[in-house]
Length: 371
Image 1 (cartoon, rainbow, N blue to C red):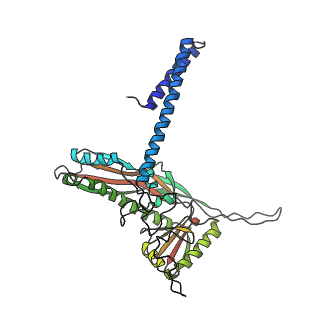
Image 2 (image 1 turned 60 degrees about the vertical axis):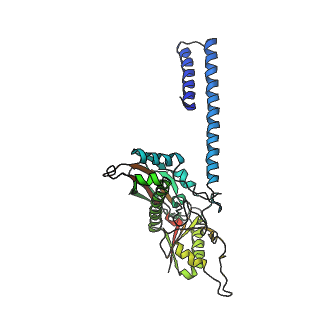
Image 3 (image 1 turned 180 degrees about the vertical axis):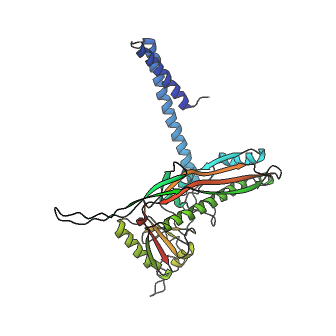
C-alpha cells in the first residue's frame, strides 16, 4: 500500500499532467479537466494535512518515551537501541541472519538533562547504569558531516585592535587562519554472543549491546579530550590541587577577559573532583561544597562535567565554538556470522564509527594543570 507521501506525489503529478496537456494544446482546461484538476489538488492538500498530523503524533510518542525514560534525578536515560532494533537482534541471533542498526545524534541528545543544561557531577548523569555511564562530550562541539575520508578545517587565531588617529596607519589584527588536513578516525570493537545466551536471557543481548556502545563512547570521549587539550594555541593555567577552586577562578577570569565569554563547561577528572568536594575553609573547617548535596553542579558558575576521559591533575575549560565534531558514519551496530561462528553456535556483534574531533578556536580552551 502506498504511503501518504507517495499518494500525494501521485496526485500532484496527475494534476500537472492535466495542466501540461492543456498548455501544450494552447487551450484552457475543459470543465471536466478543471473539476478533476481541482479534485487532485484538494486530495494533495488533504494528504499533506494527514502527513502533518502523523508527524505530530510521532513527535508526541517520542516525547512521551523520553518522559518515561526520565529517572528521579530529572535526567533522561539514553536508549541506544529502539524496541524494533532490540527485537531485531534477538531474532537475528535465533535465525542466524545478519542485522544492523545505527545510533545517531537523536539518541545522544537524549542524554542531555531536561532544560538542555549539562549533567551535574554527583548526580546520575549517565545514559546507563551507575558506574558504567557516559555523557557524550561531542555535545560540547558543533556537529558537522564529513564529506570524505579526510577533512580540511581551519584553525582561527585571536584578533586584536587598537585606537588610531585619523589618517594614521592601522595595526595588523594578528588574526591567523591555519588550514589543517586530517584523516578521520575509526573507533570499533567486536563481541561474540552465543545462541544459548539468547535462549536463556534474551534481555542480556540489549544490555551487552548497550555496554559495547558505551565503550565506543568512552573511547570517543578520550579522543575528544586529546584533541581539546593537545591543539596548538590552547591557553594554559597551572596551580595546586589544594587550591583548585582559586586556580579555576583565575582561569575562568582569564578566558573571559580574552574571549569575552564565560566557558560552557569545565571537564574534571572524578578523582580530582572528589578532592575539590573535600575542600574546607581554613577558619571553621566547613566544607565549601555541601557534602549532602548533589553537586557541585557548577564551579564559579561554570557547569561541571565529571569524566574519566580527563587525566588526573588536569581540568579543561571549554567555551562554545571551540571545536567541531565531524561525522562520516554514526555509530553502527552490526550482527552477523564471522569465521567459525556457525560451527560454534555464536554470532559476532560489531560496533564502529568514523569521526573526527577538531579544534578550530584554540583560544576558547584552557588546559588547567593541577599538581
